[in-house]
Amino acid sequence: GITTRKDVGRLSGRGVGMDVVKTNIARLGGVVDVQSEQGIGTKFTITMPITLAIIGALLVDVAGAVYAVPLSSVQEAVSLSLALVAAYPFMKRVTWWPQAFLGLTFNWGALVGYSALAGKLTLAPALLYAAGVAWTLGYDTIYAHQDKEDDALIGVKSSARALGANTIGALKIFYAITIALAAAAGLEGGLHGAYVVFLAAPAAHFVWQIRNVNIDEPANCLSVFKSNREAGLLILAALLLAAMIPRA
Image 1 (tube, rainbow, N blue to C red):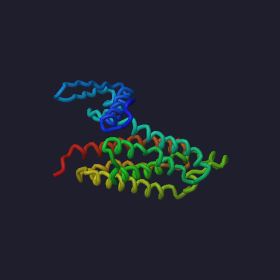
Image 2 (image 1 turned 180 degrees about the horizontal axis):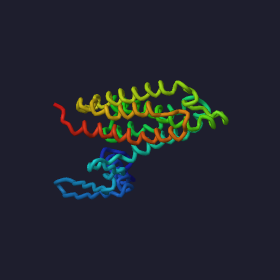
Image 3 (image 1 turned 30 degrees about the vertical axis):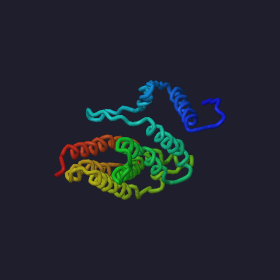
Image 4 (image 1 turned 135 degrees about the horizontal axis):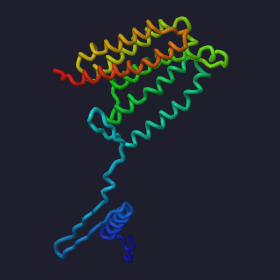
C-alpha cells in the first residue's frame, strides 16, 4: 500500500485497501488473481485453501448413525468438567454430601452431548442431568456404606455417614426422583408417551435394590452398587424403544 501521489484520493485509498486484503488472504494461504481488460473492467478471483472449511470434530457412532461433535464444544466441556473432577476429592472434607458433587461431575455428558448435537440447551437435557444427579446420590450412597467405618476413622464425610439408619428411606426418595425426572425429560424431549411405561423396568430394578441392600454388609453393598449397570441399560432401553415409536 505505497503511493507516490501527494494527495490521497479514492483510487489510491482503494488500492491500499485491496493491498491489505491481498496480504491477509496470502497469510491464510490463499491467492488473489487479478485479470484486467482495458475498457471492460477488472475481475478479481479469490481462492482459499479448503482447510479453512474443515472443522475438527469428534465422531460418535450411535446405533449406526455417525454424529460429528465440534472439538471446540468438546474442549470447552472438558475444561469445566475437569474443574469438577479436580474439586471432587476435596468435597469429602468439606461437605457431608460429596455424592451430590459426584453426580454433578458424572452426569455432565447429558448437557454436553445434547448441546453439541442440537447446538443449544433446553429443558429436556437439564431434566435428564438432574435425574442423573439423583441416581448418583442413590447408588454412590450405597457404595459409600462399604467404607463408612474407615471414613469415620480418618474423618472423611459421606452421605452414608450422614444418613446412617435413614439410608433406605433416602434411597426411596433418590430413586423416585430419578424416575420422575427421567420421565419428564423424555416427554419434554418429544418421546412417545409409552416411554413412561418402559421406565417401569428400571423402576422395578430400583425397588429390588432397596429391598435387597444391607447397608451393614460391605460385600452386599458392592454387589447392589454394581447392579446399577443393569439399571442403566434398562433406562437406555426405555429411551431407545420410545424413540422408535413415531408420535401421532
